[in-house]
Image (cartoon, rainbow over all chains, first blue to last red; front, side, top):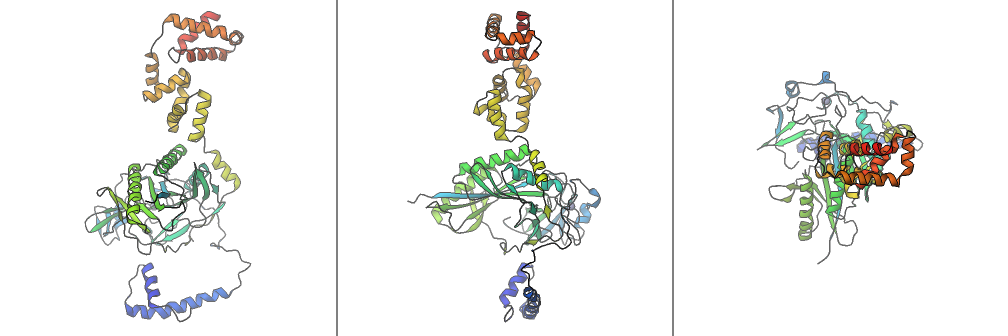
Length: 100
Length: 412
Ligand SMILES: [Zn+2]
């Protein structure tokens, strides 16, 4: 990546990760992210013409479960809500979102 | 004024009626349950939880794809679709991107682009200043059926949606009930002046009944003629009786799909696929054709009787209680659903005089000497044949037992 990431690009990446950054943080992370990109881009030099693309390295295929209810791993409502910052009548409570 | 032609495409989501969820063992039936009582680390997206696909959900998706004339992708996989929304606990939805289970189908004249499998989100309730989230629905298997933009009228949409719903119910894989939310429709609509696909489209959300689909599309056709064409997402508002602009989910179109690393790819052999195909059974249109041929029913009657698989099976079970046409009439006009009710109607059916009955039977016997001979030679079916002939002549007025008694008396 020539010249590194622009502040706009860093903001966009942050937004996609649901993070809000201050301008100091943007300045701090821009060169760091650029360095990571540069490091990873070395992979592009590897000749891969004869390599079949894959998203899997462990060789497994067709791993399924039968359609059976397994209550042993279910959480009670209390446990499910235990770490929620806010709850209401058994629901997780969040800031209002409009237009589902 | 220009003549505008609506160009419509549909995305239909259907919740599968499996016992358990898509990637965990929690119950899939969430209707009317206490909030957040059917969750586990997997469907709450807790760190370290591993999803394992529900085999039946995958098979049912393939079955639906086959019923819609699709090709099954022998190699398929799940992908992560990323976005932030409070009903999505992991920050991504496990869905399918470039290798959906089924592609390239057709229903009537409408081309089906893909049929893929994903997980449902939690359910949001909106209150003043806050939203409430229930994750009982999170992770329920959800099939998405996507058409090409092939609809040119609202009527075509109507026919397609009803047909799709009927097929899904025939397969027994979902209640496909719009009011309960087990079937959800998202139309996209644009207007074309030259018949070509325009370079914009308006996506419509929140159309959760057949009636709203129609109203929202009608509204959009008028609105887009009036206001012009911009790409946007709009929701149907029952209060306003109008579609209104919806705020886009931020960066909604940058989903950063990538293959789900926690789930190995799927591979389906030709043999497994034909096994699934063999479970499809007779679909509504084939059944209708057969009813017309086998029972001599009109198009209308056969359509009515094959509306649901249950009704069709009931008809076949009782068709021999009289002439098929007469039985069909009672089932359709009197809305009879049990054998007991049917027998009552048959017994109270307009009776005919003993003379007329006798006369008809004698005529039938005269016309069918071969059947009489067969019966005398011990072929019981020949008697049934003669009874059937008589019932047909009497247009359902006689009763089978009475007729068979007369025949026996006359030919023994
Ligand atoms: Zn679960």
